[in-house]
Image 1 (cartoon, rainbow, N blue to C red):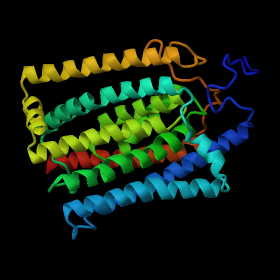
Image 2 (cartoon, helix red, strand yellow):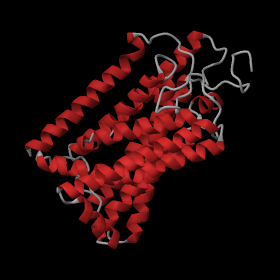
Image 3 (cartoon, helix red, strand yellow):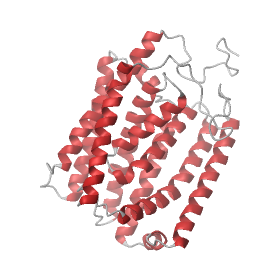
Image 4 (cartoon, helix red, strand yellow):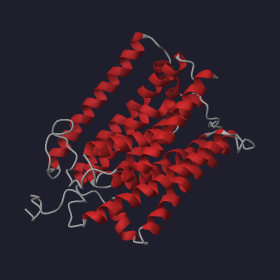
Length: 351
């Protein structure tokens, strides 16, 4: 047991360190400023596409341009540059704070990743089917003009890179790296997970994806905190996007799997609904049991029995409640992104 009271001789949280509280507050503000810059630039980029600034491009090419701009520029280069500037170029310190490091317990991490990936495929299939049914009932039509038409298997692998790999890398960098590390020094661990998930949902600016993205964002945040590394979340995020891309490709090209997926998800019958709910319930149960097993194998966290029975987030030292100034950027972003999502929902129903 070390002098902090940790039975394994090391801190279970990055923030259980002898760091001056003022330095912690500055770290939080730097990260939230970087995240705010990323989201403001993303909002501008999204508005350009909603206003059809790139209407001369084909749907396929405009999809690629949108992905490169939103991922590499808005959620990659811009926040990274802000972090380096306000952090005085301390790359090593930023890397550790953002958890770009190997997981602390590789075996437990592997089990948790398997659990998350087991949930991703059925959840993606079930949620896509249910949300599509709901939005058809209310008459919602997608406002965003960009879509992908697969002309062959080459397009599929190209979209795996642009729609699965790039978002996994840059969205995790922005939300589970910058935002989560800026949130968790204040308040409860639950609030850090929930707020990061909500902002992840708002970031998509797509009413049809909001609830699903919030759930996924919270799940990825738990994964990052449990493993003390953002790398497993990147892998799980890529798996989720890859499944969605594969489903889109399979249904468009009329493959055997695509026809099977259409058959079990296109109907609104009680049988179809019952099967989807059953698959989702079994997946959630399997995930909970695997995560509980992984938690028993991992070093015990400070606070016990807080999430999913024996599965907990790692406790960390609170640095007081955040002030209004601390949260000003996040509040403004939440209002702006929430308004955009609400406007798109009303617009999509009224079309």
